[in-house]
Length: 244
Image 1 (tube, rainbow, N blue to C red):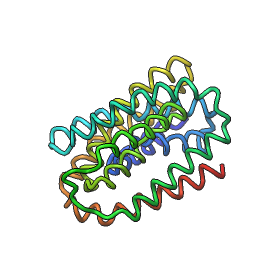
Image 2 (cartoon, one colour):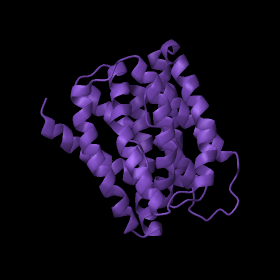
Image 3 (spheres, rainbow, N blue to C red):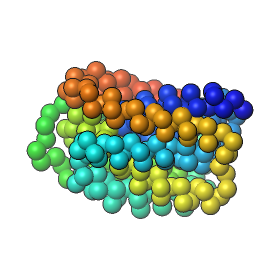
Image 4 (cartoon, rainbow, N blue to C red):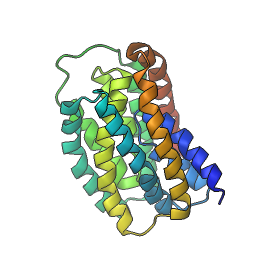
């Protein structure tokens, strides 16, 4: 396995997904299964291992920049972690096709909601939105080894956060969820370390770069241009997942 290729791929994905507020597990899953030929179980476990260190570094960097909305983050985490546990326990019993339909539908709906939600400063957002998006994200982590970043970022945008704040806040939520998911996926011994370590190193390098880039951008302008891209990306991922 070409270690340089792994590092480059990890760096690119790590930079992009942390900038957009996702853990990147969905991107890693696609690359691990299509490019490197890993099976579903091995790809799920390896993607979580690969994304966790970069998430941890990115979250700490955002925290130092005071970009994280801690109250909303912990409200999501409280509901997301039990969902990760439940998802991990029931995942062996869910037919693959049904799982793909469910996840694909969720991603597509979130994408449409992100596309058509208006950017505004919510002083008192619906207190139940954070738990709902937290549960959806937790199930995606527990069942499929996905990062769950899509629902978290989409929820934060719908609740009125700008893209920079959404990316920062989601990084903390994903750190806790990914750590919880790792406990279950590592116990199965499905991690492909020969592939995962190279991707992990590249992603760690990217995680140092992303918060620095976001710290230099105008939040409103960044949200204006990136929000539609994220919405379309979620819809496309949802359709491809459902039809896989």
